[in-house]
Length: 141
Image (cartoon, rainbow, N blue to C red):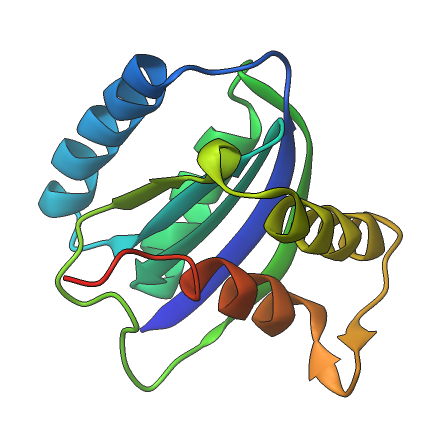
């Protein structure tokens, strides 16, 4: 069992219907391969956390990295994990473009730091800082 987290730059803007289409394909694939996780989109950037068998999520990442819908794909985390964070989600999706300027600024700063290779933000690993920031914006179920 492991976690894989990456960030990337979208090659163009994606609307909600296009993001839902990506999610639909992901849900079907992930259900077949026992993968869970969440995909975030904001201001032309993707952040995705995948959870599952280490070999399976690494193979999926290789496929994702070659997808022409994004570029500058940067693997932040690939490590064993004791448990899933999003165990009930074949693939959650959060489009953050509708959020306020403060959230967008915070997110852009984290993405900038990650793209420069910074691995620590105020004592927290960059991947956990990004994931925590995104998760704070998830709607309550």
